[in-house]
Structure formats: C-alpha cells, structure tokens
Amino acid sequence: MKTLHRAVGLVLFLLISLAAAFFVYAAISSSLWNETFQILGDNKWPSVATGLLVFLLVLFYSYTGSHRAEYERYISFEGEGGSVRISRHAIRDFLAGIAVEFSTVEKLDPEFTMQRENMDVDLHVTVRPGCHIPELSRMLQERVRTTMRVSLGITQIGKVDVLVQEIAGAAERTPRRDEADNGWEGDLHG
Image 1 (cartoon, rainbow, N blue to C red):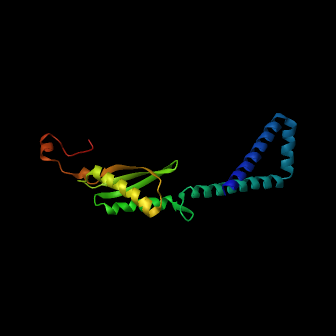
Image 2: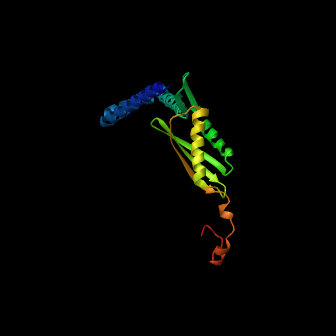
Image 3: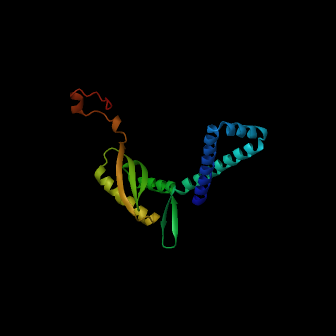
C-alpha cells in the first residue's frame, strides 16, 4: 500500500507540474492562451474527464495515505513464531489497568514513544494524599517493565518516567493550626 501511495503521489505531482508549466507557457504566448481556452470552450468533455481523473487520483491518494496512518498506530516486533503487532490503543489501555494494583494511584494515563529500537513510557499519574511518591514511582516503573516484557512481549523498553500530575483532594485540605495563625486563608490558588 505504501508503494501504491507513492506511485499515485508521483502521478499527481507530474500531472499538476505539467499543467502548471503549460499554463505558464500559454500565458507568455497570448495566441496559445486564446487557442487553449477556445478549444476547452468548444469541447467540454475532455476538461470534465481530466478534472474527474485528477479528483479521483486525489481521493485515491488520500485513501492510501490513511491506511498508512492506521498501520503506524501499531507497535510491531518479531517474536519467536513470527511478527506481532499490538495497537497503541491496546497498550495504553493495558498499562492504564495497572493503576488498580496500587491503592494510592487514583488515575494512570500512559503515553509512549518509540526512540530508535526502544520504547519510552511516560506515566501521567494522579495519586491520593499520603502517598510516598518516590517509592510509588519506583514500584510503577518496575511493574510497567515487567508487565510489558511478560504480558506483551515487548522487551526493548527505554525510560519509564513517572509524572505526578495531581495529588487528588489536596486542594480541599483544611488549614493546619499554625497556618491559620499566620494569616493563611485557605486559598491555595492565590
């Protein structure tokens, strides 16, 4: 499909380039310009057919390009019995499911990118108050690496970064006694 997409793109490029060159040349020569539009005006079917052909080529080019984008939504790797393709969406959902294994994680939103031969993972996490973030981060990193290797067969994992986006419920906390004595009014957002 990729080769077909490139071939259709090349044909479109050549057709449009030839048409542009012809119109520039015709504009320089006023007699050719007048003859061209007289011929096009007398017989409209060749113009309609050419326009439809270019339109269909553009549609076909778009169609073959959309399948290429769909293919890129998969992670492919060679396994023992052949190649394996896992959708990026399936990997994201699978990794998000790890959150239920940790009582201090309220939400886990994974993102990943391919860096050369390795997959880098970013875990955007919302944690509950009272969580020991360094320990949780280490455990999440270890769990993601193990799960991806054992359950998905993805062994080439680069970085696993934990990004704590929010501590749930932290904005609603009540002021401590010493904070209230120092004029703190309970508005964390200024």
